[in-house]
View 1 (cartoon, rainbow, N blue to C red):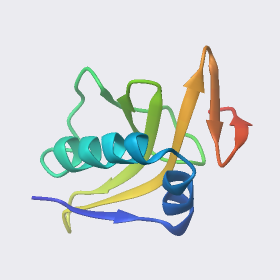
View 2: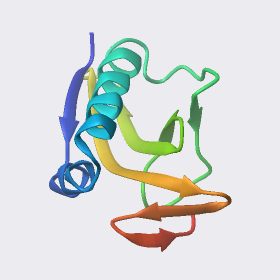
View 3: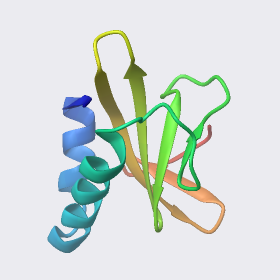
Length: 97
């Protein structure tokens, strides 16, 4: 079982959402990323090289960006954002991956 860590930025991102949205995001993180977070699924994918994170978890319009350290069984949540159409917003600003 992988241990979950959230960066301070990811915690700030999470706090920006409504309570119901926060609960849905946290539930998805706990369900999807504690077991085999490095295996691609319909809602999890490895990203092309970028400066944010190696992996993305899709939960409805929300996007959770994370890195996996298989050797010490850790998942580090780097950022949490949302999509509107083709635009991705992280930390309140439009972001290009």
